[in-house]
Image 1: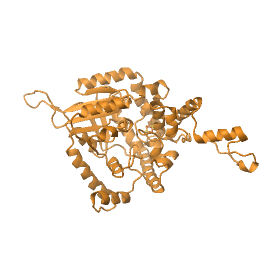
Image 2: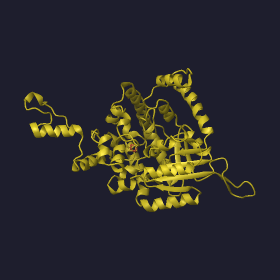
Image 3: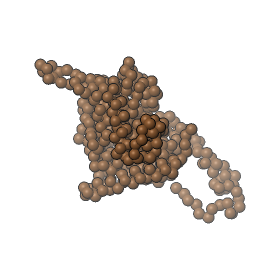
Image 4: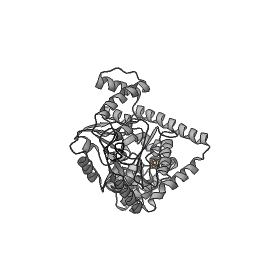
Length: 420
Ligand code: SF4
């Protein structure tokens, strides 16, 4: 059963993580003597460039991927993306994957359940131990405390580990490494890809580098919106994602993948498949993105998934991952749901929970006006008479009694009205 609100201890854990990321972000800008808003404007301009002639640039990226030895697929919807994934995995059984938001979006779990599939991001691994869902784009286990993990390890592995983040991390990373070492296929997302046909991946843990290099087959799954003009731009945006995601100045690793591993060390004959992956496949997912551009939600495609918008969202703070859709938490999830599944479904995942406070916009490095998009969705819903049960109730009371609270007597009407 879906939980409605986060428990107090989950809210406290989230607040702790969010506050430290904000402090780190502020410290970064202060130490570099950079004005935050100017920085945002500069990065937003960089991110906008490939969308100026999107189809042409995407075509160029696909052609360049092929030239570099990638196998390229374009999936129009989630089902087609899952079919490609199944087909590419083929007869292999042991799969390792790293965190991929596009994977969540296409319900990758429907593919994963058929294989011996292991998550390798520590946060995702922890969430899976608890049989829960991610509570954050960047920090999926943000709601789980060290004490809770200790208890879970006792239950699953019958071992007693101290409630110390360092000891717990080392213990669990060893378990994850064993899974990566035996994997035949590695599945990752992509933070960006370039028009010149390179995939850019950023990470802290080192699991993505291993997942993309050790198995013989590497499958990249990402939205068509991850396009950037150049590696230089992508690296700058990786830094932005780190600053606004966790408050780091840069992540520990950034990988640039330009195709399968290769060597010409024997008689100068080029051979594909050396120490890294022998095959690299990329599945580019549309799943409503072109439709978003047509319907006026195109700015959302600039999102770099830093998670900053939800960190300070009062609705997320109360509802956690229940606010948003299965792919994306928060208002981004509402917009994706409205376009991918419909206005009614958007209402069910929280379009009327948003209080339009604009905290997401103020914290977004890409200056994406998410609450404006939610407001547009509500307008479209209203035109189709799709309303929340609370709205319907209020409208009924206005019609009957002339006020949204019901009743005619003065004492039932508050002397102050709070309006968003
Ligand atoms: S909408 Fe903005 S703040 Fe939210 S994840 Fe995307 S880039 Fe980050």
